Length: 98
Image 1 (cartoon, rainbow, N blue to C red):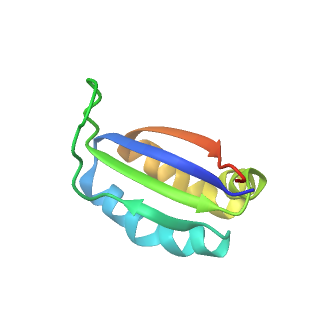
Image 2 (image 1 turned 90 degrees about the horizontal axis):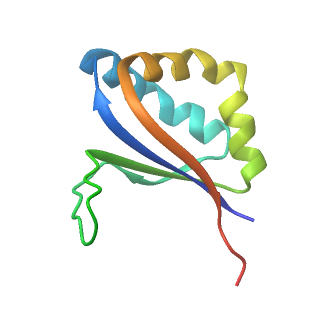
Image 3 (image 1 turned 90 degrees about the vertical axis):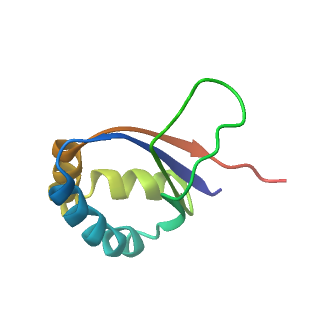
């Protein structure tokens, strides 16, 4: 069953480092089977008080595939780069089978 990472980049502390991360991470995600569904773009708040600055949604074939990418030693350096340069909220949610 498909699973999705939903990521809010709440704050960027180091624009240059985060730009490096954004340039490098697509190939890591693709190698792990991840596909961008949303990567930034305009946000319109329709209800509530949540006003995110940047949203990213990534699809994986399964939650296990997403976890493998998250824990992959090949991603660890990029993950640390993102964590140093941003404040991020991230959740993993499974899709549904109709």
